[in-house]
Image 1 (cartoon, rainbow, N blue to C red):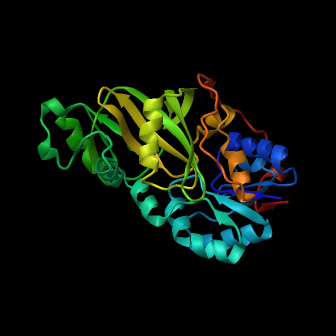
Image 2 (cartoon, rainbow, N blue to C red):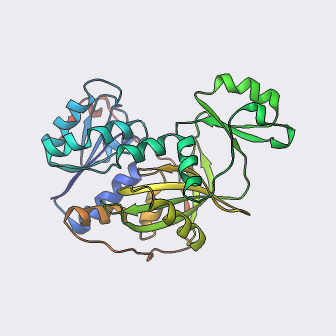
Length: 326
């Protein structure tokens, strides 16, 4: 039995179903346990079991998380949102020691780099890879630099990201942007690479996905593209940032090459696309928990096109989650 706990499960119904299919194939008695602070999170109603936890910012979060891990006999804890990453990275050793569960989280220094887009840019360029230029101050700019990108150094889902067309717009938006950074606006095809590494950081697979359409930073329409230039560049980056389990790397393919804009050491919203294409991170995590050794694998299906859509869940009052679902 290999139970997993999916934190901040929110709307990640596709991911839960991917794990359920993997368990049906490899570990039939195992359960997918979904956790969230919001009792109306849709994923809670699709999981085999569910738990409502405090918000990550609340003082009792770690205590309640450990309690849930023990009560549900969890083997693997999987984060899914950026705010919980530094908390889990700092608490990983304690959680693993007191529960015997494994936490799919990178070391704190890796999380620190990935959670700060300026540090990500510095790391990428120091390793000889490419990233869009950053401007330290607005005094560096002239009319030729516009349009450009203004965004928070930390954050996700494209919140606070703006295309700025003039200095007047920049002066208006700067004080309204939390911890801002100013970045070159580049043109080219945008990709997310779904990556998988074993628990020691060895690269197992890299699956580039062309981002055809997005909403709120999450992919709506995408296509698997087995582009070796992207794969080789992403692999070079992964070898400098060990991230166990599933992670995502966002980049553009431009005239200058592969330019990196973001690294997320967690499952991304579009991960079920690469899983469906054959790069099955869910099955691989089960194999790793069973002590198996995995080799690098590019045996996923190229060219698959994915169109994502919303669904509704209808609930009666007595079905609402207020605590634990057995």
